[in-house]
Image 1 (cartoon, helix red, strand yellow):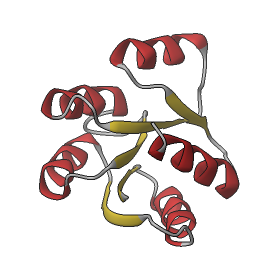
Image 2 (tube, one colour):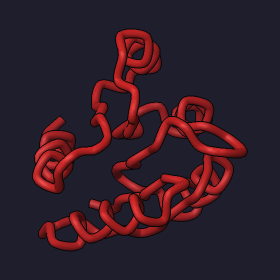
Image 3 (cartoon, helix red, strand yellow):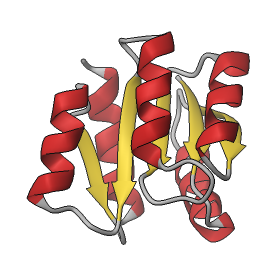
Length: 120
């Protein structure tokens, strides 16, 4: 499974990448700092899963997710957020995104969610 990591924090990207690199059958194909980079790398690498921070400069996660889903409506997106409230969850569901992890999360939570996403 090819994974694209999108987060404005280099530390968070490193944590996610290390967790994924320790997981058999998963490969990080790219890292983006914002939604614009995410869209470009999505077009370039066609990842199977995108881990996508919601709050980022230039273009946030929801806007990027909308554009990615316009390109490939069956894209598997894992939203990462520090604020997981009902409004965020409802907005994600309306877009067809069902996987959200609240920061901070453990590597095992990330791995379990990624594995669950591959079964869908």
